[in-house]
Image (spheres, helix red, strand yellow):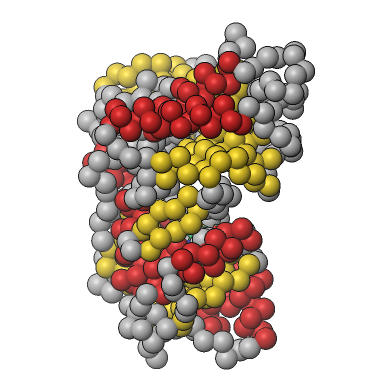
Length: 479
Ligand code: SAH
């Protein structure tokens, strides 16, 4: 096989990134946009030692799982990898992915009666579910403003007007912000009142990203501009435009969204990290609020907050159920963010300790405890793999009846897992956004510690995307 060869390929699997996988004499070929069950004519684009890549030339026989994507740019946008797959099949694929990871990487026997595997919880309406959007701002070939994403393999920028998984307010905001920037834009004119657009190549220009957040239960809207500079011109006019934008949305959908925060975030670094450290509020409060269950959360632009509020409620409720609290437990919530899970658990626990690396999030967590009148929580800022071992060393009697972890995709650091084993909680509730690292960590807790996997509940937090979230319960094996 060589580059540019044309082959016929049956797609038999999907990779973790949502690429279709077919095999030629056992040699795996990855194809973007292809799904299980497709028979395609493919052109080889790249060959490596153990695998290759190809692109679809034509679909000879479409998979029964195929559907027409809602977004016209779905095949080019990196946001949703699976929009061309029927929702019920997306769910089936994600359920399977968790099972495969647990058996292959975690060495778990799922048919073992001691493990309860619950089928994935999907969404009734898998659209417009996201409460947070991050749009890069750039220019197209004609130097017009575009807000959307970088097209693959080119330096071109793809402009979008609408995103089918975002809250609909984004359609209104995007249009009005684009018009506003275009109107006040003047490249080459150094006036302090002009807006310029950041250019990644030259690292010049002001506006880099638009970040929006909506509290689904409160209707509070945040708009934050990430800028390469220290000041944001035309603030009053911008406020007027955004107020009007939300007004038109409310009229069209008969809703009552409120502009609660306009801010800018300063990021002057040459980096693909979106946010810088400093946030300046232009209008309203420096955060918005949202409720999950009966708990009210304060969310600032820098803090992590789950993007799918409907499914988050289900995720946290499962975590709470798995934690099995009676009111007497000391609980640790590690990787606690703004204290979302901590406060959920605090309602049923004696004491909850949260650990989180982002100081701003810890501040939010403390504020969140206060505004909810919850006084049995304490939050610590720092890296979990440092803070928790340190606490254990200082006081080996540190009590932990239940430990909840909710790490980023790379999973838990070994230093943390080994300390968890020493703390010897009765139950470990692991909330994971990557089943591969989850399986690895389960294996560690099982082989190095004395823990057994009891329950698994995948939850679909990202319809259209290929990632899957999971809550599992491990408990100490009685000797
Ligand atoms: N449980 C929270 C946040 C989960 S996301 C929620 O559901 O909202 C993972 C969190 O881990 C983020 O807030 C991130 O800032 C934090 N984090 C990442 N690396 C960390 C580390 N080494 N130690 C502690 N927290 C970390």
